[in-house]
Length: 541
Ligand SMILES: Cc1cc2nc3c(=O)[nH]c(=O)nc-3n(C[C@H](O)[C@H](O)[C@H](O)COP(=O)(O)OP(=O)(O)OC[C@H]3O[C@@H](n4cnc5c(N)ncnc54)[C@H](O)[C@@H]3O)c2cc1C
Image (cartoon, rainbow, N blue to C red; front, side, top):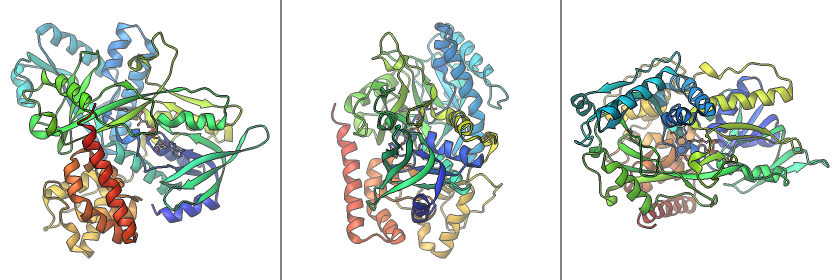
């Protein structure tokens, strides 16, 4: 994905659809639309997956909580969502196989009756997943439980294990965009839609885009504009039609990241009930453990949500009953906050975001012609894209069917068996295959030409120097944060190690992207300031 070439295409070509926002929703839609033969543009004002889509719990699931609520409240809407999620689970697991995997999740119980309740519930959850190869839920004895997951609290009676999926969310969304580009989409990051051009009746006839790196503004020509801006959707909806009302009720969710030694094994943990009636997951993710999430209303969409001291204490206190030992707050190595794009529904207590449905809606504004894809969740991105693309195709008289159910993404399009070069560390080789799939071969070619780039960047992490060059040349990484936060997931694993590696990464990016010294130094100081701000936030309420 060469940014300059794509910018030229955005300026000079005329498109059927221009998709605004390259998170899970926008990137998923771009792939669906191009596979149906439409001419597609995809832009994001930040990086690919720079907002909510890189900050999720990373579960591919129907949602066990929704199933419980569906039965308790006889709410068939919730049941439908569980079924949608479970039906989509298998597509995500097979189409981006190098970035996703089945995940065993243990629910510790503290009595026989509790065990029976969760066994019945989780077995039913499995029954809703049709044609799925994931193992059925199973009640483990106390001994089995400790064999599988040695760090569960000794007071637990036993545990019920069930299976869902896990994905590397940021890389999955980036790979969707990359695959869409491979199939013909013109796309660039750091391009913001700043205004619409409208005719006398208020119908959108074009839009103005700003390249936020180089600063230029230009017009894009497209028959339709699709708003896939997640939690930020209301801004574009109102810009398109000022008479419209807000539909999104943003909600903040945070995760803390702790060292692996506190929760060994491969399986995750479901804490089924917190003191405020939620559920929390403890999940192995790469070399660390994520604990989350929270759910609180969030209004300040201009500020990146950050992890606070209070949230750390809440999550650690919740984990305390379930884990043998928990870290001290100062042992947290990283954390992150995201904003859920919940659709507001008329409810008795609109302040309580936990009661809002996680569903999606394709909204067509008759006056302006703007189409907005609202709400949804990561797991159902493909279905959301299909529904939106069906609506687009009805308008554009295109009757090509959706092709995304079994379309493989870049990284797992070919059967591959790549041999580890003798002088490359095994942990780095494994990491490359997990992160880049069959594209690892391209990184190995870089190492062949420049053997010094096989070196690790930091002694405690598997990331190597050649990756920096690769993500600049092939994955449109434009800033230090693109590399640390999204091309690799280093930023959500360990802030101190990122800080220690800034100069090394900046030097390689600077050489590859031809940065001036001024640009390089600014990149280092800007990103250092962000990391320092995250660290400071954990000591404040
Ligand atoms: C804490 C948390 C945990 C979650 N866990 C899960 C989970 O485990 N499983 C699951 O299925 N779902 C989960 N979700 C939900 C899921 O992450 C979201 O539904 C999904 O990522 C939303 O994707 P999106 O593309 O709609 O929005 P985003 O990812 O936010 O993308 C919107 C994009 O629009 C861009 N944009 C905004 N304005 C403009 C503009 N004017 N011009 C150009 N670009 C613009 C932004 O830069 C952004 O990149 C979780 C959400 C949160 C917050």
